[in-house]
Structure formats: C-alpha cells, structure tokens
Image (cartoon, rainbow, N blue to C red):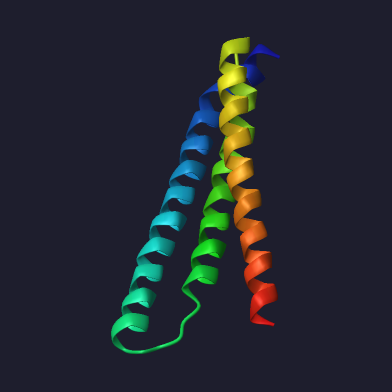
Amino acid sequence: MNFLHDIISFLLPIIVFILEIMGVFVVFWTCIKAFWEYIQNTFMKRHIKIQTHLAKGLATGLEFKLGAEILKTLLVEDIDELLVLGAVFILRALMSILIHFELKHTDKDDD
C-alpha cells in the first residue's frame, strides 16, 4: 500500500502539471486565433463568429484545468488544502458553466 502511495505521490504532480499546461495552451491558442479572427472581421470585412469560437476554446481549456483540479484532490493532506482546492474547483466549474450557458444562448440567437 505504501508503494502505491509513493507512485501516486511521484506521478500525480507530473500529470497535473501536464494537464494544466495543456489547458493553458488551449486557452492561449484560442485567444490568439480569436484575435486573428477579430482582425479579419475589422479590416477585411469578414463575418466570423468570434464569440462562439472563443467561448468553445475557453470551455475546452477549462475542462483540462478542471481535470487537473480533480486529480489534485488525491494529493490533499489536510483540511486547509482541501478547502482551497474546493474553492478553486468551484470557481473554475462556475466559469465553465457560464461559458456553456453563453454558448447555448449564442447558438439560440444564431438559429
């Protein structure tokens, strides 16, 4: 049992870090792409749905971050860490819900 705990304690921070980086990369790339689409809409008079693309990318990035937060719960050692982790998880989950709500609302308006 101790061996399994040692393996989890060693591998889990690496996995969490990778998931966090993936989430950051998705958000960063989405914002760069949305900015490029904004430039095209403004100067080239295109009609790209920037809000929808940006919201979908942000939601995807947040899902990676939420996955990392869920895995972090396995590393919690005391109640204070659990409270901080719970607060961060709730904030990220609320942001994800708001983005999904906005996406649903935007999709209704487009129909």
